[in-house]
Amino acid sequence: MAEQALPEELEERIRIYEDPANDPGGFTGADWAVLVGTGIVLPAACILIGWNVGWPS
Image (tube, rainbow, N blue to C red; front, top):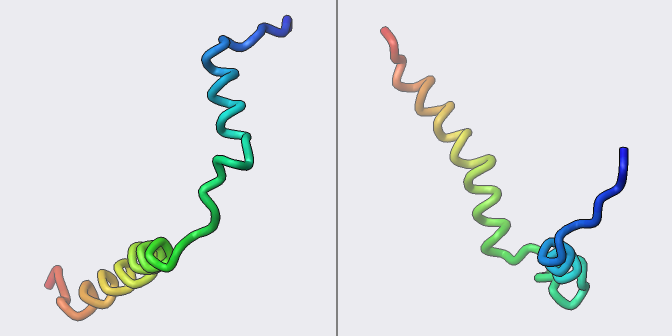
């Protein structure tokens, strides 16, 4: 398979993405709150509500 050069615009985007100065840093408290809320609390609440409703009867 012959190697092809990437388009210039794509190479520029990759360079920008890989630049450490453009790293946004780690997760903030709000990020963690959203992750825990949507990944743990919401599914657990849906399971508990589903058991307590008793649907379908």
